[in-house]
Every structure is written in structure tokens, then in C-alpha cells.
Image 1: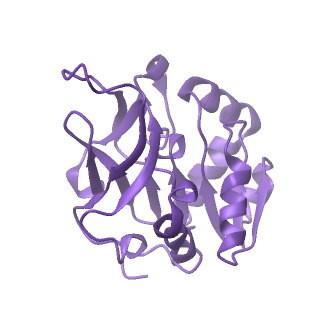
Image 2: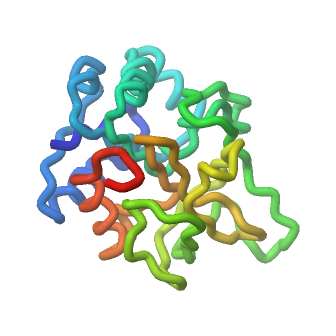
Length: 207
């Protein structure tokens, strides 16, 4: 059973439908007590870091996530869920969850032909192996919609990069936490495979 955290960040039901498509049962909740009992957690969402953090703190979901991470529960972050797991975000100069060292920064593009937000299909290049990225080949593309991106403080936490006016981190992880800036639920077969792998991942790098 997967628990999907609902924190008014949007895109939650599409993640639940994607899980169902690969035969994975998932419930959606904003109740921190249910998150505390979760076997696996998906932390998705679109939107802004300040409003997301405000809701997490108000409901106690921030501490529920922190405790789940400390307890070794497998956690999968998606989009803004890959940004506010860091220590801070340039979006509103927001203090974030601090599960992974680093910050979320805004694209600063010199090429005026490139747009913000970065939107559409883009290649994801795996930089070090991870069980959830097994099978991804050079040239494989995933779907993105974002103006900010995660910038881990330690390169060992970067698992994949993509390019938009230069390379940026598109997948990161630390111990039982793995997160993607792209949307697996909108990325066709390859994205669904990541969600399917998460259903059996035990939170270790050999899982």
C-alpha cells in the first residue's frame, strides 16, 4: 500500500491514477497520523514552495514526513516534492523541510530562445545507478513543468541530470528518499515503470 500525501499542491489524483494503472493500490490523505503508519509514501505536487510549506506546517505533515524519513520509510518525491525536501527555496526565500542538504533555485537563462517555465519532454541522463532508475537509457525522455529546480549540496545526492540552458539536477536521493523534478505520472511507459519499481523498493540502494 502506498500513501500519497495531499497538501493542497495539486496533481495528487493523477499520481493515484498512474499507480492504479500499474496495479499498485494507493490512498490519498492529508492526515499526519495515517502518514505516520504508511508503508511507502509518495510526496507529489505542483505549485509554490511558500504555500506548500505553510500547509505542511499547519497540518503537521512536515513532522510526519521528517519522522518517516528518519524511520527509513521509502519516500518518493515528485516535482515540488523534489524541491521542498531541501533546506530552502529561492521561491519566496522559503525555509523548507531540510531532509537533504541543498537549496532549490530558479532557472537563470542566458539563451533568450529558452523559456521559463521549462515545459515539455526532455532527456534524463542517469549519473549514478539507483534501483528506481534501472532500465533508463541514454535518450530516454520524461515530462517536465517547472521554473525552479533542486540543487543538492552534495554531488553524491544527484542521480540524474537534464539540460535547459545548462545541466540541472532532475533526480536526487538520500537513503530511503528518492525524488524527481519530472513527472513520472505524465511520462508514459517509462514513468509508470518508476512508480511500479517504487512499489517494491525497500529504501536501500540495492532494493
